[in-house]
Length: 142
Image 1 (cartoon, rainbow, N blue to C red):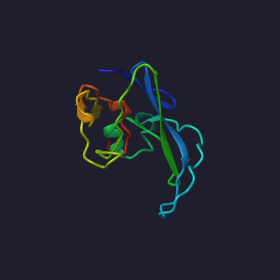
Image 2 (cartoon, rainbow, N blue to C red; image 1 turned 120 degrees about the vertical axis):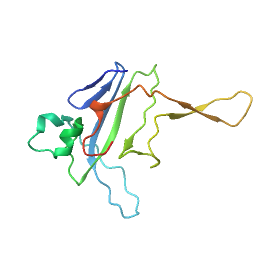
Image 3 (cartoon, rainbow, N blue to C red; image 1 turned 180 degrees about the vertical axis):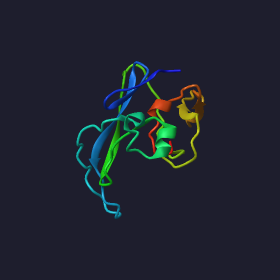
Image 4 (cartoon, one colour; image 1 turned 90 degrees about the vertical axis):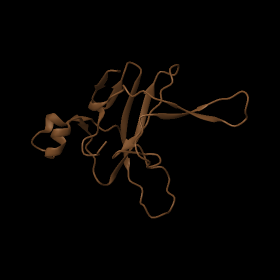
């Protein structure tokens, strides 16, 4: 299992990969197209156990980390990794994939190139031993 460390604004997985959260403004949900909002710096990441008097009780049971976020704010995910070592990342919220809202699966679909066919085949990569309890966002149901 890869070690997980939480730094000020990064969740580091192993020696060569980290994710961070960039603050931005919410775009109105009115069906119109808007320019990309500005980036407003990185969100700090806080341990739930450091805020026992001010977080909901179910967060204390679950543990993990949280990001303080106002309702008018949104976030971007940022990734840092070694260029020479590819990483596969799945993003989930509330037990579902954040990209297509299907149920959460441990496997990651990858495209397997085929010399004998012009059509790509899909394969699956599974690393069920990667467990990130410290990176779980409290209150999100992840």
